[in-house]
Amino acid sequence: MTEKLYERDSHIRTFQAEVLSCEKRAGFYETVLDRTAFFPEGGGQGCDFGTLADAAVLDVQLQDGVILHKTDRAVPLGTACCTVDFARRLRHMQNHSGEHILSGLIHRHYGLDNVGFHLGEEATADFNGILTRSQLDAIETLANEAVFADLPVTAWTPPPAELAALDYRSKAGIEGEVRLVKIGEVDLCACCAPHVKSTGEIGLIKVLDFEKNKGGIRIRIKCGKDALLDYRAKYTGVQKISNLLAVKQNEVFDGVEKLNNQLGEAKWALSQMKKRLIAEKIKTFDSEKPVTALFEEDLDGKELQLYADALHQAYGGIRAVFSGADPAYSFAACGEEAALNTFFVDFKNRLTVRGGGRNGIVQGTVQAERAAILAFFDAWQP
Image (cartoon, rainbow, N blue to C red):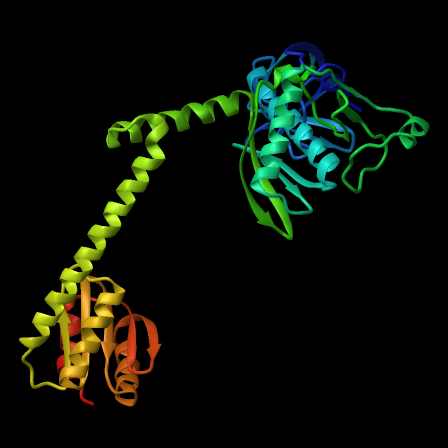
């Protein structure tokens, strides 16, 4: 059984321990200490990194009460000096403690339970119910007030009688001793991970986004330094947009909305121009063949459909229009339904075609050279 120093003090940076064993595995070494401040992966939180003597700690896992340290090289038996990557540890604690505050407040105010937590590039927390943006904003405000109050954070493992008398949050399936983390009067929750010593260490709690998930809601969170870096990146993005649009930063939304409206008007004008161009080209269409393929530049799906349908209405037969470049084209084809269906089956059998349709129109994509498409049309007979 490895003594868990991280449960006693979450801020231990260096410590000495006895190396009990070090066994070579495939590509790494598995090292066991008599005690450790390296937190093993658990509770949705990743493990600690750092150094063990001269070896880098790459992973830490808890198996049957023994904490296994994955190192990049062998560590001699005996006393070793160990160092925890505290920047990584603090990032984890800021996000995890921030999540506890949010989850405790959501449970208190809306009766929802946290049913999932994961800490990666950002923290995510899943709840068994739905919340609105305004509700999350209100909770976020309360959570940051708890941070500004610099409330104490304590962790302990109460005896069974004491535990039974406490009202605490917990996920199902915890066996054996239960370690509790108390954050002022905001939250009391079962948790195995290290946490900050006071809420002021968190710095900031920010709810980034949320989405529906398995009948409930998943919220995305960043706290502490992660929240600072996220704000800095977004501030830089807004600054660049502000410069491009030549507007003040607090007017960026209005500037983007104006640009979007202008683009919409330009797209509409372009579509009208394309429609007029298609109408003129239809007037000059000249082919005695019952099946034809035309190639035009820069037409979207609706424009291809409009062109092919207008040709069919004016000249009958099967009329197809393609847009793209070798060897990939989008297309639309129109014709009498029975004949078009027969044609389309042959088209798909001869070339790499994806798509479909009904009521006398088919459309999709074809992976083929222009010459191969034209050769198929020239050879096909209704």
